[in-house]
Amino acid sequence: IADLRGVLPFAESHIPSLIDARQRLLKAGGTLIPQSDSLWLAVVNMPKKFEKINYPWSETPYGFDMARAGRYLNNAWYSGRADPQQLLSEPAEWARLDYRTIESPNAAGQVTLEITQPGTAHGLLVWFDATLFDDVGFSNRPGVDPHPLVYGSGFFPWPHAVAVEAGDGVAVAIDVKVIGGSYVWRWRSEVR
Image (cartoon, rainbow, N blue to C red; front, side):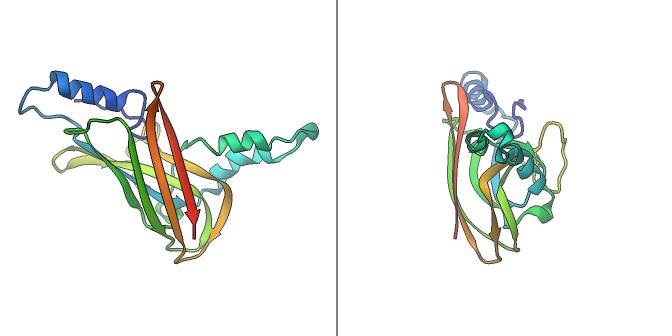
């Protein structure tokens, strides 16, 4: 039994530890808890979070151009919560981690999201649905509050806010890899 995840399952050495424990310590016929995590994402409207990340770097205090720092901060993800009405697209599952069989701590996925309501998109919201055992589980999806201090959602900002209309498509490629003992995320979004 383990709960090593943080905001998302890719925290510290969570997945490598589960793989190692399963291979070395779990007896034949044993049960691993949790069994799996499904990872979801959607286009999100999060103006306050987006402004908090971007506003300080759009100013030019004392004549200094702070835009380079802003580009760095837009290439990191942040913990954040959103209400269901802030989602501008239907959610899509981009990865599934089955801890009973998983061999790699890395994950990747590609999805195309359809915008369902007009608004201003600020990036992607990523969350998980955990299956602990059979039909027992929990989620940190929007609208569910399992524990706000532990299980927020991941906000992956875009460099600029984008006006979207119902019917627009957003192609997303997202992956996470262990590099040098730490998880490194990469995501690409294309609004069509």
